[in-house]
Amino acid sequence: MYNEIELFFPYFSFLLGLVWGSFSNVVIVRWPKEMSIVRPGSQCPECKAPVKWYDNVPILSWITLGGKCRACGVKISYRYPLVEFLMGTLFTLAYFKFGVSWTLIEIWILLFGLVTISFIDLDHFLIPDVLSLPGIAIGLIGAFVNPERDFIPAFLGVLLGGGFLWAIAWVYYLLKKQEGLGGGDIKLLAWIGAVLSWHSIPFVILVSSIFGSLVGITLAFRTKGGMKTVIPYGPFLALAALIYIFAGEEISMLYLRLFFPWMGSQ
Ligand SMILES: [Zn+2]
Image (tube, rainbow, N blue to C red; front, side, top):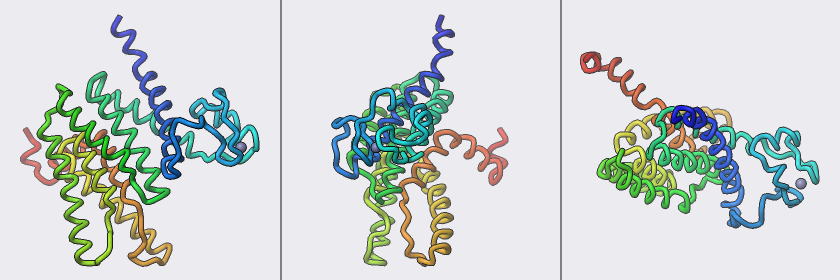
């Protein structure tokens, strides 16, 4: 009996991800405009026509409508179905990684935050406190309540994640007299530390700065903006956290085997 129910979990995870992806789209579009995320209901960004429920089905509606508003025909960004599909896929991968567990619920919440924050940061160079601060609180409460996690490593994760970036931002400010890292990045890394514990922080900092510098250098050459080209750091933190969630252990083992073969042998 249990096994038959289990067959549905991957589909359930995907559908749940689609629904949260749809909600994520609402937050991405409305939060920066200081609009309510509940009212009014979904509407066309151009003509404001209310979107009927049958035109609001994640991914499918965008495809059947040919990526256009039914009322005015304006193009609807492919980002809507992309965010939904991404969330559905990540939720399903998390199910396969963590199984039905408390940790899965905690990871789902973090995944929602990482995706939503990345797109808001890409658009506006901002990471909303309304997402990151409750995220840190929920992450710490989760570590306390969830029997699969311990509180101290999560608490250290917040301190290390928040503290490390804060120190860098402070030094940068002393040297350059201008802000390089946003406070939002600091709170996002603290959230990541709360859920993935302090062990994840060195990995996330290293991987995000590698990707960030590669993209930053490429953009600096392309736009001739020199080294002052500003890129949002949030999406790189999110990407590094995703890699850690799904492949962190494997990559750590590989690293040990490559550089410390005598340690990985037993
Ligand atoms: Zn319209």
